[in-house]
Length: 103
Image (tube, rainbow, N blue to C red; front, top):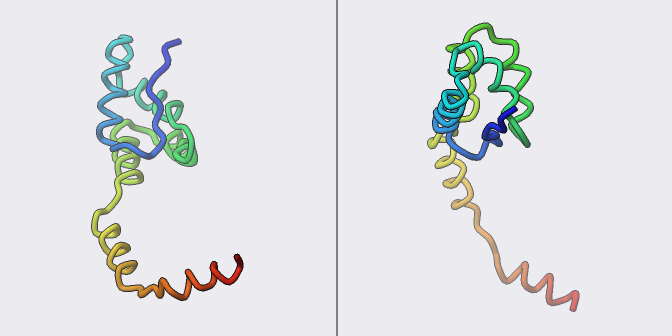
């Protein structure tokens, strides 16, 4: 059996699905049924938790939409988290004094 590219949640889900589609095409397996069958098998690492959700879906359209929604990061959430971090004031001297006292 061919080794397909694995998805770990770190890359764009849309790009991954295009890669998977291309790999299935090269093997002559690029049908909606095969995409639905192979997608859960390509998940690795922290993305594996979502394999069971994909297996429970009936159509490729549902699986594709669910996969993209689950693994697409909302840039507004990231910006909000960065703004929250920026507003926290750190007293560098307090922390450096703490470590100096242990030397």
